[in-house]
Amino acid sequence: MLLCAEALDLNGGEAMVWLSAEMGLTDLFPNRVELWKRRCSNPLRRTTRRELLSEAESDGLISILNALADRLYPLLRSLLSSREPAELSEQRWALFRERLKALLQERFNMRRGAVQRLLDPQSGPDLCRSLIQSMALSAGPGGFDRLKASLMDASA
Amino acid sequence: MKLTSRYEQTSCRLVLEGLPDLSAGQNAETIGILTRFSLALAGKTEMEGEREHLQAMLAVVLPYARQLLSGVRKPCGNAKQPIEIRPLNQGHQLELRSRQANTPPLLLDLDDAELADLVRCLDRMQLDEKVAVPLERPIPQPLRRSELVTRLPLQRRLAAPLVGISALLISAALASLLPTPKPPANPPTTMEADG
Image (cartoon, rainbow over all chains, first blue to last red; front, side, top):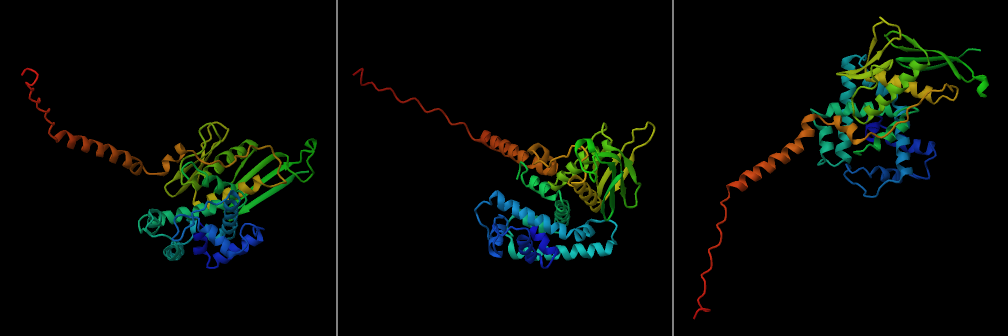
């Protein structure tokens, strides 16, 4: 979902660093390199780090995502709304999928099944929609607790 | 003095009206006794209700949103509750039941954006310090393995056990085709003892 935020906002990477400082997370992520290292704990990435995140670090990343989703909420909403003109909506989705694909190809391991499903022309659009819906439900005052609980699901 | 709290998103407006519960030590700007609430969803009927309806709304809509975040699309609520929500092919359906007999339930179809707006309004209301109405607030919980079963389609859930059983049956059939080894011939008895 952090990558989706970058696909939606060209300055998403910078926004994460800025939000981290704004929310007082400099002890956890003192600079962009440390923040990047924590993001590399995702096993789907091309270069991944084996060390597990501490609870404070994972909470920090969830807080950043929660704030990013809140900032991007109008855009998330316009993507999910069925009341938007169909042609405009399709153009927005195509742009989002194109940017996400470029970021995935640049940073993620293309041999992983989850990444391949996301790039697959058949299953990809539904998965992209599901990611955007998850971001919309992770925004706002209750989004942090919802997202944290979902990351602690039995299968996770 | 009647107090009003409003929570608005693009397609949703939630308004609470009530009074401060001074006997409970609340200040004069906090709603402690809910007299009425209204929920307006853009382009749909505005609904009004009392505390039990707001309680049901919290108890049904927020857990439903929590499930969606884990990719689980299943209904929340039941026929005994005044509110139920279920997934549709494209979106979600909110069913509101009146306490009055002979009144048919109100069905509201929501798209993903409208549901997200409703969830945000309920979140804001839940965390508003100026609302101290005694409501049970559902705390998001991780889903159990059994609750996540529906996330995978039936075909993918059955694929692994079917492949396993098929492999076992094929192995058993091939094994049955192998000739049974003959028992070893009896070694010739030695006559040395007799000699």
